[in-house]
Image 1: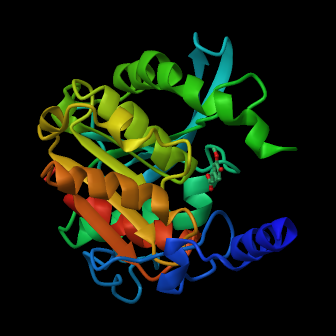
Image 2: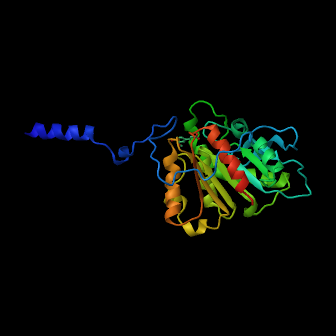
Length: 295
Ligand code: FER
């Protein structure tokens, strides 16, 4: 009798299906999973038009430059990739979007994945974005910041980057370029690990950033209650953006933040397009985000 009960218990455990399994989850490619979509998880924007990412010879082009800065936080010289828009002039002042990369990336990742300089040149030529400076720093704030070996081992350095960004990156940009220096002209967004950083740092420094975006945010994102302890305070943001691919196994992270914001009636964008955890997702997210920011 005793044994029978034990076998029944074991069989029950083996055959038991967790609640989420009833919804026929999709197995993602890459990180995380399984994926369970809700009625909220739909695109807020259509896919970009054809040729949105094609370089046009007939329009003015901005400039990309790789610059170096001394980081007090890390104690060495670091790199960041900076885009200035066509006609950049010290006579004018520009808003700045800080754009953070993923766990396997560095200061060149956004350029390789999405060609932000092409997207922005095209949108500026069409009058769909405002002239802005784009800063693509290296979010791995440690002496060896190359994405080599076990990239997960460097995760603590992504948290240290909060100080590098606030104390070293932003002051460098604001001293070398002609920028506005108030929160309403400063945005922070990033993909995956960089999406988590953007939400963590941006929402903790509402006095510094007026526009915050998490694209396909990774598990480094703080838990919703910790990320947004005071939902009313977050309402002062000009834009709070969350996006994630519907085939991304990390979507539960963004879904959790969206649900918390919805519960507390905090206005935000929730954009779920039919992509994975991949560059096509980030390219279209950036394309839509840069049209909303600073306007
Ligand atoms: C994790 C899975 C993915 C994680 C980070 C990532 C910190 C980051 C992915 C990316 O940046 O693409 O568990 O933990």
